[in-house]
Image (cartoon, rainbow, N blue to C red; front, side, top):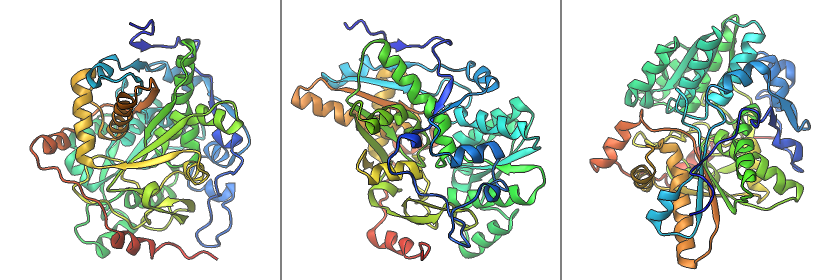
Length: 455
């Protein structure tokens, strides 16, 4: 057996002390956020009415390669970081593959996912600014849980607008947020003007992340002492999540391992962007090459079937316009979609990298995702989050290709978190009640027709 251990841990001293800003090495920078009224690039003072001031600086900085992680955040990170890089020996044996499979496990904290890496950073800057609290949206619930935990630690109020279908399907995730002191409201709601408007136009809607974002932004901008924070998509979030990739690369370097394929699930882009950051940086600088694969659900296929265009980040059309691969801000995934990754668009950073041909994208069906999750759970001993299981599915597929060809490729994927709050979805899969919904070209075109008309 290889001398590489099952779990590779960095020491606290080896943990990264700075976040890596991938944009600094991008020749083609991501397109700027635009003011929805003027279509001019958003200025710092405009964004400061929505986001914390320090986070606005991070959002707009395309040139600084590294941002020092404040000592207070590093101290918090040490409760659950460095996280392990695991060699999936048992999965390799099960598949009978010559491939070497590694996964970076981000579920070893109370929030159960990687989202805590950015939640504590955003809450810290809100506290430092002297704010009373923050508002946010959450879909499957990982981000809302992480932010609730971070706010409790720092003594901030936290208002969470949770996509209605997830609010109803995942009551225990909701209760964890409430345990940490957050208020949790199903979205769309009658608490906001934009929520009332969406309900009037779409009675009985199960909601979307775009709806929830609109509500959270409205409350933040109309309540003194509050700002809005987001768990994915934005440049600042990918910056904070770069600690995932930095740790992964440092752990692999300890044993002289260079991955051939890096795989991550892709919803808004926080996990994927964080995982690939230092590897993509090497690729951009011409220092190394990797095959990087983004995996998204077939029911919400923004990269593989979306349009690369400026679009609203929210359904209520109150947020800035972002250039991204999008299905249209009014796109709402089918209610039977239980695998997370429900956002209608993709990070502008990842969208630019994909458009430049620097990474691939593929979509997978929901039932295939849960089948892969079950295979993984039975041999690796971790019940994976449905989101993570998209990456597991493609990692298994790539390992089986190696079995056919005899190639000993090294595969790394991101295990974003655990699935213990997703048992309703697992139950539907086991009972044969889970179906695969794939939007038709006509449905997508109807959404594309409503994209903003740019000059």
